[in-house]
Length: 188
Image (tube, rainbow, N blue to C red; front, side, top):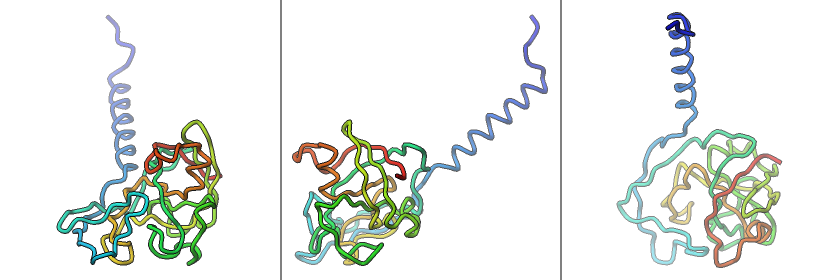
């Protein structure tokens, strides 16, 4: 039986497939380190919107990157208050302001936040069969946490779109299901 590929073609095909695998591997975002959780002083961790507080001694992964962007990037939508005294902690990174929870605003994981490169840009969020446009106003810090600056909450995972109540309402998610939802997003 005659082979369709010559020996040279097979070698070239193996090299090509190996290169594709290496490129795909390089595009993955892996933890860049870990931080040890510290217990918050009494009353210092705001548990609004079912926010987690750091556990003393627990190790939390940190990330300097987020998954690669595509026309429809997979992410996990979480609920955050951007108002003063809300579970978001201090004012937003983009403008040092607080934002009304009835305004569609979001914080992005560190890699997607891109050192503020997406500040005040709009993104389109698709979930629950609906779509909404929201403005990026903050970073969901994936590199630090478990301290006063981060409301004694763990670092964000690397795939988070942390959204105001307005985003959840616009997506038509019943209020008792707010908190976590698989979504896709793209720059608007």
